[in-house]
Image 1 (cartoon, helix red, strand yellow):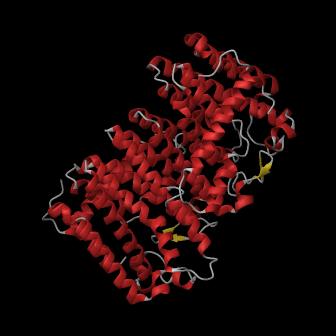
Image 2 (cartoon, one colour):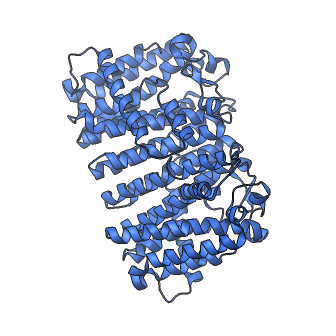
Image 3 (spheres, chains in turn blue, cyan):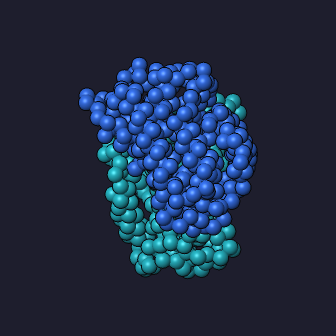
Length: 298
Length: 298
């Protein structure tokens, strides 16, 4: 159990360290596979992400009274899925990015074939972790369904298809933008909350509340991402800023302006906190995390 | 339950029809996703495969005394994984194929980004099917583990990486070739047998026997594939023949000659049948299937 008097940033770093260690173990235990493949998987997994999604899994589990340790497989699984999606999004056929978190992207470093395959392997391994390492098998299966729905055709992958299609739209609307983001980033963040809640033994009402919280912070996260692209610091971001803006990509500020974007993300964070009010003090960390999303600078 | 007096080919067509119908349903139920994505998933799924892997799932389940119907989710899941692997293997960065089963490959038809994403979505949906539709959740989780191990870094994906690497080898050996094939096609075929057996309620000894059967027919299947590439009929194969041979790809005939390849596949089929001898008459269909692999002409 994490110490509730600990400053938020300290707690974050501790959980990050825990997740990083378990991710490394999960790769080491992945058995006999071609060294270049393991290297490519490990390279992208350890490229210094914030670990937002795994930390959400852990905090959601704790907020429901569960033991952090039991949520670690799901925490690692969701980070693997997130990482695979970054590898594939960066490919020449998609966003064609050469830098990610300040480092060469996977296909630049390992070649396109190995990048595609490392992504495939990470996605596959995520489900193996859930199914194998969550001890209550009804819960393991429910988490597989959560993660698959969030990551698949109706979720993240569908969002990426819609995002690529939106580049050719003449009159993009806020509705279209929001529908894309709900799929592309929102649903995966949401599944972090529901998986954590399931593992923590949440009742259906609490599960629903945490899901609502996830939907709100997911959208808020995307809006702040768009804002940081416009106003952020290149060094802290580890990637070029104004990239989306300069490419004429559909973003919140480009559609509704900077101020309205800020107002909207603020409202979403308020709604998120309201959703978890029934959790009382158990929801403290999640509340702090919601505010952190609003105030982050990278 | 299928009728054991039915001719083998008739049974095969019936099971194919059953699988095809369920695959279609599984896609229709996959909810709200961009039409182009659903179209790309459906295009490759319905491109007229033999359905070897799903039929193995169904026959393995029946051989263990299980009800065919209960094995259909796993049958569909494994065909989705097989189809995703074909889509990704055909990509320009990998084998760069423009034809598959006589039709334009996915990236030719839908563009590279959509092809990658359709593959990703099929892989993801496979795990959702297993976790959601297999009723006994301990069995669902075990099947997820089977399929993930067979398809992931230590299995199929690892095999594809090793296969791409082998193109640069100066002195390829039979051991290397066999290790590649065990991963690239063998383990997935093996998982068809173990998933079917689990769902059918097999005891550990029967599970092991069916796994052994799977290993043997998996290798035999690959050898006959190499032989068909050399000697097969282009029209029946739905793809160019001598393609592997002309590209100097590592194949059984190129390493040990045609006759020795034939002898070897025959021996493997004998061993496969021996492994399932303890099943008695329940193993009849699997025995027929093993012989069919040897005698197939496409």
